[in-house]
Image (cartoon, rainbow, N blue to C red):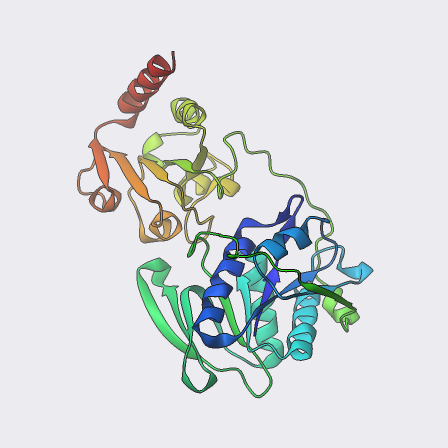
Length: 328
């Protein structure tokens, strides 16, 4: 049985968790039983509807007032209790900041290995799970054969956008059980005490179907006007390289790459981005990549589906003008 740690938001299951549920159904189809869900702490009422759409057979809700604020150790305690109670053979989460952190805590508690950033997983022989995961910033794939210890699950996090989220062929009517995890004071030493919503003037980066990428070639913090206009005209989101955030030109939550967000849009328009492997790891799954760069040998140019060689400050305004013209 695959137990999926599900993260929620105001409208139900978060996108990456929806992908993880889809991923889990693929493992189940290869011979590892059914899919069940673990939800920790308060969640919106529509969560159950979303989980039913993904065909889960059971929902396990860890309920404790102390779980109202996120704590990796407390979530891990809940995950360990749920995995033991259900006899899960695989504990899966999205490779989100929370998913990776929680399963790392679980691995430490159970003295198990964890395979992070998986792109495929199938049930193997003798109870093993065969996982192929991204390493070296996505430049290579590593095959790992996992087998939990006696009564302990294989631990896996799924790389963002490794699969497209899709509902099950038929919705389920999952059973719902609530339990109080065994928490200690030590589990709550590190926890979220305040959160503030991110104000992103260019849209939701990880869910946008169009991302306009910007790199060092933009030239400065005051040179983003045309790119922001292009983003608005395309109805997309702005994503930037690590050097742009390091220089303080744009906020970190707009960063795309190994240490930023992973995106999988229909179109990624890379403007002035050289294409370092760390950035490529965050956007290489885009369906179409167009590069605008003065260097025709830049890695992003050589890997892109299409490239325009030239100054982005001449090309982007021309593109904007043409879009405005066609929109009337």
